[in-house]
Picture (spheres, rainbow, N blue to C red):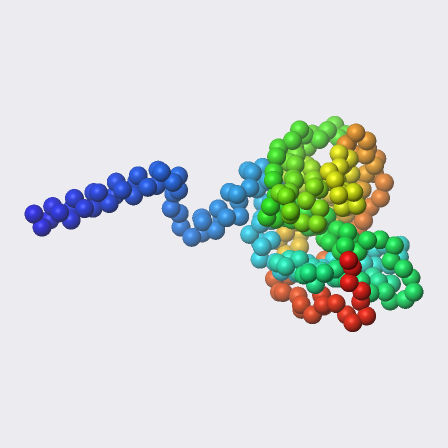
Amino acid sequence: MKLKLPFLFLIILVFSCKENKNDNFVEKTDDKSERLDVTTSIYPKNLSKVFDAHGGLSKWNEMQTLTFTVAKESGDEITTTDLKNRKSLIQMPKHSIGFDGEHVWITNNDETEYKGDPKFYYNLMFYFYAMPFVIADDGIIYEDIEPLKFEGNNYPGIKISYQTGVGESPDDEYLMYYDKDSNKMVWLGYTVTYFTEKKSQEFHFIKYSDWQNINGLMLPKTLAWYSFEGNKPTKRRRDLVFTDIVLSKDQPNQQVFDKPKVAVTVK
């Protein structure tokens, strides 16, 4: 009898575990598999393949600092972003724009007036450049869309929209198209709702090319803006080339994002 009771208890325990597993549709895995699940299974399978083609979300999530330079007619722009809290600093010859985690600020290095909107611009180039990884942010809704047909090629697509209250412009939408063979991102369609505060039906288009390996992650060297008609790209009109790219696991000095005494907070 002393042997039968523990044996009976063991059988009940085994069947109880099986029933609980079936009820919750959860299968226990080792720690390595669980970590992998967090970065892939919560996204659509085709989007996960795009992330993997660019080096993987796990590796991206190891990084803490991204710095790049863009050559403009007014001079070089150097952008530094903390990838964890999204604080940022854009250094330009005549101005600096920063985001300290709460407020956007701007400084003027001479009498030249900044003609843009700092609140619109402070993370614009970062967001375009850090594709596709930034579309892994929280509060995003994904939807498969019809492929983009351009110059005899078909590019499968994913529509990205935002839950209410996410970001400065939650009505913004993106169309991300990728190469069906390599799974690398090729096109980004995007709307601009910041200035109108209402959903737009007009998509602008950027083509991504010249992918380069930076610390094991594929990031673009060139972004090409295209003219568009009927929510389709037409002719290439201007390029932006990104240089001096630094992608680091080290956290940036948080003081560089602090508002200087001479800066003005943007309302």
